[in-house]
Every structure is written in structure tokens, then in C-alpha cells.
Length: 497
Image (cartoon, rainbow, N blue to C red; front, side, top):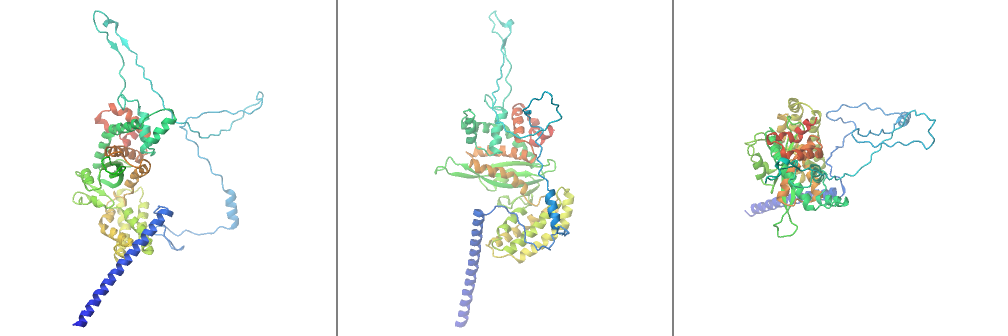
């Protein structure tokens, strides 16, 4: 019995040792991964571009072997001699021209002009502030004078302005808003710029203008959200925004709020529509409030805040997010990670081949070409799971755990392979955070969501944000609410031809 007990004890000790060795191996892998990430952050590029090492004779999946013919030395020299100087692109015709004629410094009395040479250069004239003085003559009706009657004075009504009794016209308001939310120029820097021009404007004045513009645009934002919820396919993502916490005990402490971003890549609105919804947290309450009546397809990065919609919606996940895990695992399992990245690359090659194709064509080609790659990839991942807590193990776990939602895009030609379209809409917010650092309050963050939504939609439809906003702010005070769609960027663009 003692021998059996000793054997059992030794076996238990061996199990513990193996467990400790596995934990140590995972810890080493995690530390190596963190070290590589730190080096990459400090010294390297943040690009996730991946180019696999490939044998020079190996063919790619979608390319034929090119005929390789090395040029002779004299051919190379001749090609170099024929190299042309770069041709300067013509300056746009719509820009105003200031013509300066430069005559030869000689007596031109007996000379005959045979032509001219024109050289165009580009100069800059700083934007100018203009005071608009509206003069309204007053008149009195002589018939109302005398006999104890009060004289009847006639004077024209002032036209409606974006901000009643305010000094800012639509063009100035549009400039302040676009510079803050498109060009990422914080309000205090705009104040400094106005000061250089000899215009003393208080920071609180400009902030009040921005708040007033957001209030005017709220009906457009609400309509934008309604249209997105009428789409059969929505992409969703979320991004943090620091918000100044006035009730915090520690001075300068900020609250971590979130913009939930919804993008509808609908054929009815080529280019798509974007709407941001500000929430004070990242809980499920955000998407529940926005999507409570929605029935359709929802694509996300798989964040748990989107869980629970399976009975209501058809859920899709994003291959770009899955790919990111494998990209980060290269320092942990280089060969495995490169193989995984190559498999994902084949999926994206198919999507590039289908650019501009109809939904039916996308579904047909995906079924033929993408499904075999996905089946092969899933089987290979199952055979190479790795340590659960290692970067490679996490990449495999993330991908296999969401496999059905990652791969069901092949069954519907409307659905994109990833969420990049909505991530592109978030990019201006990330740039803005680096400049203005935080929102001044929860109300300010919500106002920014309204403005960001409409300016992001302008970008999607290649609409000049300043021209659009200046025109809309001039019209919206008297515009009929039933015709509010006319002011949305994608419809406004059509009306302008």
C-alpha cells in the first residue's frame, strides 16, 4: 500500500510540476509579447500591413507567373535617357486669377507681339472677417399724423439668423464648427487666431456658438438616425471620449464616456450614412436604447455589449478585428501567425476581386472561393490552438469562438467582410481627442455627437462640409420641418447638382 501511495504522490507532484511549467511558459510568452509590443510602440510603425516571406518561384493564389526578362545594360541606359521630367498638374480653373503682365524692359514702339508665355503659381490670402451692415430705413404714413393718432411707422423685418440677436452669421458659425470638428483646431486656438486679426472674441462666445449650431442640427441628427434604422444592414463600433467630471473629488479627473457609432452602407444612399450616439458608459444599455425596434443585420467587433440581440437581429463579426489578434501574435508564434495572416489575406484578395460587383455576384463568388479557404482555416486552427493565455492562444480562441458570426458574411452579398467602413468614420474623433483632449461636459459630448454625425456623412458623400453647413445654417431657421430631408448632406448634394 505504501508503494501505491508513493506512486500516487509522485504522480500528483508531476501533475503540479507540469501545471507550473505550463504557467511559466505562458507567463514567458506573455512577457515576450508585451516586450515586443513596447518596442513596436517606441521604435516601430503602427501599420498592420503584412507581407509574407515568399519563395521567388512561388505563385500567389490569384496571379499568374509573369514572364521575367532581364533588360540588357544598354536598354537600361536608354530608358534612363528617355525618362521625362514630371509634369506639373494644372491649377484648378475655379480659383480666381490675379493677372500680372510683365513687359520687357525695352522700348516696344516698333515691336510686334507674336505670343506670350503664361506661368501660374499659387498664393494664399488669409480669410477675412466681414461686417454685414443691414440698414432698414424707417417711414411714416402722413395720413396717420395728427388728430391725436399715433403715427404709423413702417420698417422692414430683419431676416432670420441662425442665432437670434447674435452677431455671428452662417458663414462664421460654419467656419468655427468645421475648424473644430474637421480640422481639429480647438476653440482656444481659434480665439488666439481671431486675436491676431484684431478681433477680441471670448472663448465662451465661441463655445456658445458651437452649442447653438448643435441645437439647430438636432432635427437633422434625429432624421439621420431614423434613416439608419430603416436600413437592413448596420455596422456598429464604439470609441471612448474623456469627459470633464465637474463632480469629481479630484481636480482635473475625467469621466470615460463612449460614442456608439452606427453606419448604414445602404444602396439607397451610396456612400452610407453615419450617426453617433453618446452614452456615459460602455454597457449594453447603449445599443439596446438605439436598436430596440430595429430588425435586420448588425455587424460589430464581437464586443459583449452587442450580446443578446441574436433573437432580434442577424449578427455578423469583423475579420479585421480577428486579423489584429494574429498580427499581435507574431512575436509569440511567428510561423503560425504568418500562416494565419496569409489565409486571411486570401479572403481579402477575393473581396478586392469583387469590388464593384453586385450583391448576387459577391455571394456566388464567395461561396465558390471563400468557403473552401474558411473550411481549411478552421480545421488548421483547431489543430494549432496553443496555450490558452498566450497571444497566439487568445487569437485562436477569439476567432473560433466567433466563427459562425465571422463566416456567415459569405451567405449574404450585402455584408462586408469587416467593419472598416464604420472604423473610418471614427477616425476624426481620434484625431480630435489628441487636440482638444476632452469634452467639457456630458452635454457637450452629446452636442459633438450631433455635429460629428453630420460631418462624417458629408465626408462619406464627398460634400464640402463648410459649404453644406453654411447653407444649412442660413436656411434651417425658416425651413419647413416636413422637408427636413432636403438638408441632409447626401440629398443636399443632389440638389446642388
